[in-house]
Length: 280
Image 1 (cartoon, rainbow, N blue to C red):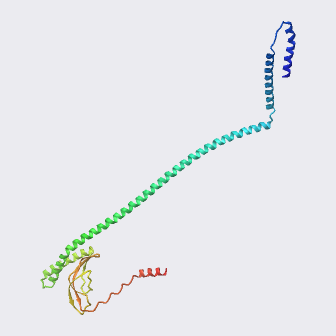
Image 2: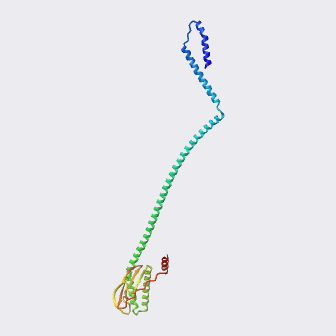
Image 3: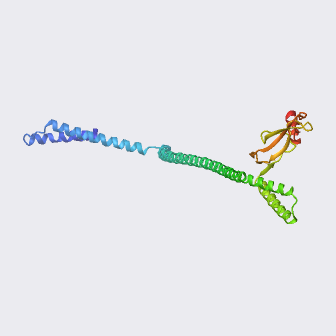
């Protein structure tokens, strides 16, 4: 800047005599000052640029390496952040998918549980219906058998009376064979009754039981226990635990009182179980 200013001043000094010789040529002082200021600013900017260039040129190798490392670290950090954000997004997506899968699995398990319980209820209902239907069929069959047997009892009574009357008479051999045939039919009919669970009640000589016997008369007999069946006028019949018809009997009186029946002995297995329970 000083050299340029000196050259400018010298030029101005050398030009002064010319001005005086060539009449009066005048240069405004302000113009000269502006030109000098612009030239000075340009020279200063050039010097600053040169200084910056010199500074850059004077950077050491370590500084360049450090700058390169910083730049690499920044790039790696940015790349890591980008990958981390992407991984976080993928993880969130996976978690959403897992939650959806868990909800779907729970819904499927609940549905399967409901189906299992419904199947169990249906199976239980079916078993109950099957047992109830089977019991109803058995009861209906027993009622039908009971009705049929009850209707046949008077016929059986008549056959027995006819056989007893024929046996009490003196009959020819041919007629005896006929009576034997009727007796065989009577026996087969009783076998059919037995197959259906029907049993006759013929309590002659037994203790009178008002649940199975119908007393139609009393007979004094001191040789027998009191309340003993003396004669059976009409047999009774039972089917399983039901009385189809009570036996019509006569009952004795005037004899000794019948002793009380002895208690039945408990089965051995039941006795052993009771003893084990007591020990425990």
